[in-house]
Image (cartoon, rainbow, N blue to C red; front, side, top):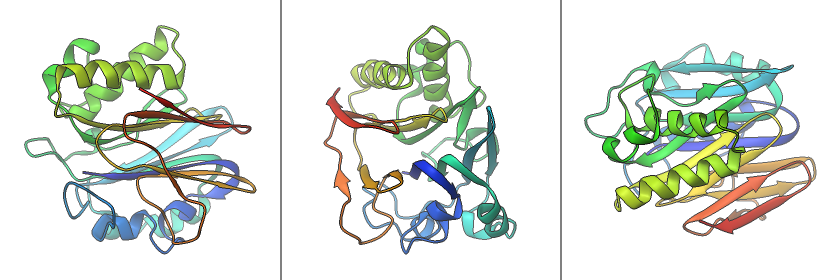
Length: 233
């Protein structure tokens, strides 16, 4: 349910996550190769990048392939930190832009790949921009950021607490703040690939080139310009 990808490193266009790779997010929207739940991601898409000190977001509730404006925008939108996602909505969840990743708060951008009972996250946040489970997960993470937790710490606390309340939850989160990436593996796949000019993180490899490494189940991945770390949750 959903696929997402992020980049941290030298400036790149969003097309490098979406259109340019053989198995970029455009291909993953209709033919994912490693997705464990669902077969198509046609319930919306979104992307985020950074301009100076601010994050910028663009999201739609239509399939990625249906937006004629996307190819041009994805070639022009360029940054040292990028995040993009395609959505397969959990049954019963609304299909609307406010339910589509990336969710944002200040410089934080966040995507949720999975599902969780809303009762397992509603007591972790005061409010959310949508009734969907992912929006409540994002709100819980952002609330912890306001309380002073770092990006990885906020993701880890929300995932562990929500996972305890809902043992069947799938909580693969991918977030960035312009200077770092943090991601959790809790019920679905995640990979990272270190290149000479940066690091890719994605639900599944964007190509068949060597170098992609799977992140173990129930782990927290953190990426900075200087380091890639994996630790258990």
